[in-house]
Image (cartoon, rainbow, N blue to C red; front, top):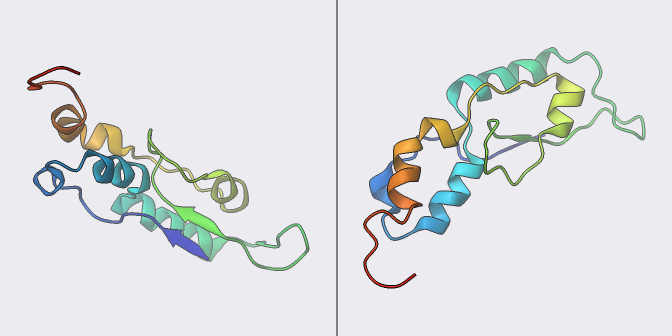
Length: 108
């Protein structure tokens, strides 16, 4: 079972005034390249038995995000998943615009 995070491009203008939502989606983001790899690894895995010997795993579908709040340990260990993207780098302009103090007026 793959629990997919946020499989979409993050449009900065949709998060104006909603920094918490932007942070969450940065943590849950999965790129096209990474989701393709994850599904391919899942289909090609020879053994997905869990610690009880049952052929069942739950993995999270996110990229290798700096702000990740879900663990990729199981996907890495069982499937050999090696995500290549990080939302913090891909959406760096939005991070600077929405999550910095630039343009702040008034006290902190």
